[in-house]
Amino acid sequence: MQRILSVELPRHVGARITIAGWIHRRRLLKSVCFLIVRDASGLSQVVVTAPELRAHLETLPEETVVAVEGLVTANPAAPGGVELTEPAVRLLGEPAQPTPFDLYRPVLSPTLPTQLDHAPLSLRHPSRSRALRVSAAAAAGFREGLDALGFTEIHTPKIVATATESGANVFALDYFGRPAYLAQSPQFYKQQMVGVFERVYEVGPVFRAEPSDTTRHLAQYTSLDAELGFIGDHRDVMAVLRETVASMVARVGALGAAVADLDLPEVPAEIPALHFSEALKIAGAPADEPDLAPAHERAIGEWAKREHGSEFVFVTGYPMVKRPFYTHPEPGDERWSNSFDLLFRGLEMVTGGQRLHRYSDYLAALAAHGESAEPYEPYLQAFRHGMPPHGGFAIGLERFVARITGAQNIREVTAYPRDLHRVTP
Image (cartoon, rainbow, N blue to C red):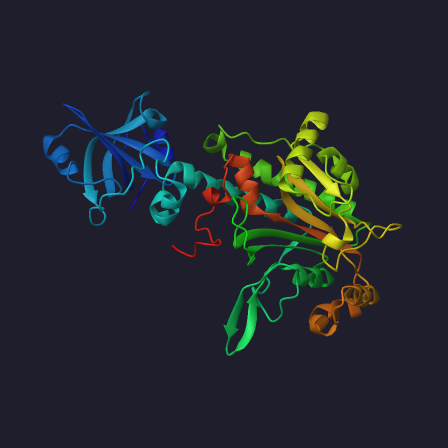
């Protein structure tokens, strides 16, 4: 089909062309019918005056897929400043069944659970599909930023033999008659791959069987992971993360008119950073608090905005008791770690840090945690045979998109959420 997208129509004024898409809306006036056709790039307006065609269109519900041949005519009042006149319309499938809610309205009226129950339909609405465009652009910016810094993309297993990556709960499965688990992260694999490529990244799903029923948690989400070798400490990782986030924001901004009304952040040349102990003071939390609660994160985000004009802030030096065994301790005071979180608009979006890289340190760390080294032997192979100082980070893509778009619930920016209650559609 020689098809023109709606966004391309202004370049074809005076030509007779074909568009195709979904019937977004039919505006039936006394002497004319305006047919609005939606495609992946936007909306096209078709002017129908022929009585026979008008009568036919009255029988076709919204979301019916059609092709329209017509003359591209300039009209400043139409979407994109053009419209199709003298049209011929043909069906490209069966007439659609009536929809449970209107997609042509500016705001979706159903509750979020209803939208999620009808995800194949609700995702067609511009407000939902735009979030997915932002997500795609952010992931592309992640890749572009790290490619420019000499990173290599990798793909690691999502089915693993042992549930040893963190303290989080895991999903067990029957793997040809023996137990296996869905991976909580690519952490062990990306560290090993530092021994191959020095700098690696991955975009992929991770699975957390945590019974957290909140607006910021999912059982499956997309993790943007990176790991790099030959670092001085975690601050080198933070510098790479800053460049990566800037690339992600720039790629989202390149969507242009599609995100013109979004409040895109400015990534400062140097993101403010404060030690965990100082963060507790700013948040008004007890000095022996082992982690930051959501209210603490919000308070620290407000502080960064007020004191530094930044919507991003690093919190470094989390207590070792709250970090995985592979985390490198802070030299001189092993209560703290060479780790960090990046908060964006008062929400933890990234976790990262420096890792241990000596085999003997891993044996000591596992012993300190009361664990045997044997289950970790496939992971520890890399460290037995020489690994450089290294570190990395993981960005929660859906959290990033939710903060960019202003969504109050992470499920609003996830195509098919998986959480404590939902495993369909």
